[in-house]
Amino acid sequence: MRLRCWTAERSRPPAAGEDGRAQGAVGSAGAVAASFAAHYALLVTVGTLPPVLRERFGLAWSDRQQRRLRRFARVVRCLMAPVPPPLRITPALFLAYWATHRPGTDPWTRRPLGAAV
Image (cartoon, rainbow, N blue to C red):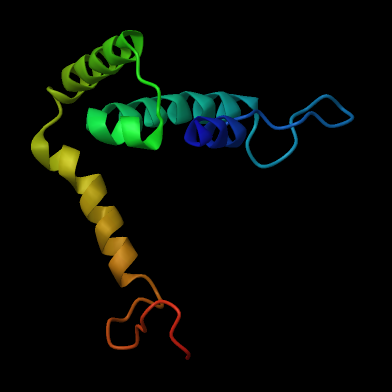
């Protein structure tokens, strides 16, 4: 339940200013896209957990949500089928490379989390 509140809080559209426009870096179209992404991220995150974990975490899961997850998975499979595997994998490889090779990530100078510098 707290996860649902947290995602709803994060995906709420930005408040309008005096001129009626959305405030912040993300406009209303971005807020709608963020809300859409947060909804499906929650659906996939909760839906792919084993039922035992969902029960232990107190996350509600209905047949309706299961149908939505299956429908979403079917759409993703259909959209990804024509994409060649190298193009499917390249974005993830780029992100992994960037995360490990950006400035400040030299393996020789890394310290354990919380260690004094």
